[in-house]
Length: 479
Image (tube, rainbow, N blue to C red; front, side):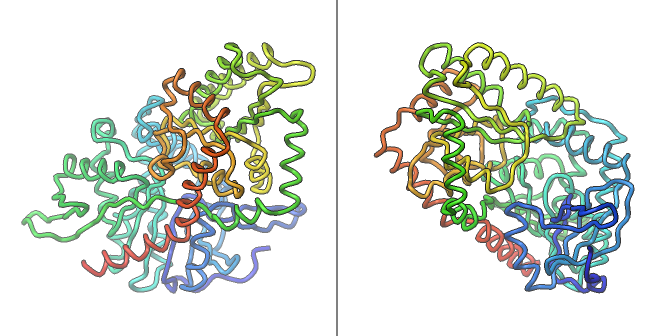
């Protein structure tokens, strides 16, 4: 059940605003609906801040055409924002995921530009901002999350100029030459610039944003600071854009990797595949940015070339369902299904399968078991803000074994420099990297994994949130 009532509106010193609330609805029977905390590092990182600062979280609760009153769960006040079915279609599936998502991921798929989508995006962003403004105590800190809510800082600043406002963009930010395609580019840049601090995954993302701020709104840019001036040339606001690479809940992953039941499950996974010499693993949402087809093509050619055989190697591909009502995602699923079917049809034997394809979402315990069972992790994204799966694999490998083949187009590549870095568009290069990973000596594997583990273990998600919020406080004090 929902439980205790929320704090009185206007009393929260720290507010997170994201597209979704950090809880999922669970139904025990027809008349009883409750909530459980969503998995994910962001919730883990911010829960202690919420508890210490009487925090509130503003977001959609996941059901269209339903209005809920604010409620309290796990020491967090949750402020639901209602969305109609039309708004889910236009604001979320439309502008957020068929306009901004492909545009920000280097136009891997063509973005669509529709004024009705833009109108819905503005309307919903204003509603999120109003909910945050109503909940915030005087001089509170508000941290807005991700590309679905890029106008919220501006609306918040208009409603509550006393607030300290941060924004974090979890996905890449494109270069101005690509961003220029967006008809509402000035509005997006202006919306973001009303935050005191704008965080990005990579230095290149913050540099792209600063270039766009200079080019499209004529902002004065000096180092990482952007000066906003009025018509008389007076500086009325200073915003800063900087990289804050996100990470994972390292402790949780490492602890799960030591649990006897998880270790036993990892051994069972290998046994179910016939205990092959090498297990390769890919874990993604079924998204065209993840390079799944490139990975399958390279693997299929290695089988054709005879470099790998189904007796000695198996690929597990987890592709969790994603945005299945969006046409480009439906077409991608058909393509992936077809590729897996063709490769398995050509190379499977009665005892061995080439690709174990899993179109499901799995709990974190099962994912860690997969990490432990796999000798080679394949991350072949065509464009990624960070890719936390790469970091989770490294965190789970406590015995310093295994190999990570990592796309240079991920944010993780900036930090996990001891991975085998690849350009996933280069299929021959990808094949070579896979074979190098398969044949990696124990000594080299250990050296590489130790270096990556040092980076991941010393930069967890808690450090990420602490550094962002400390910098936000410093920037706000300079205003």
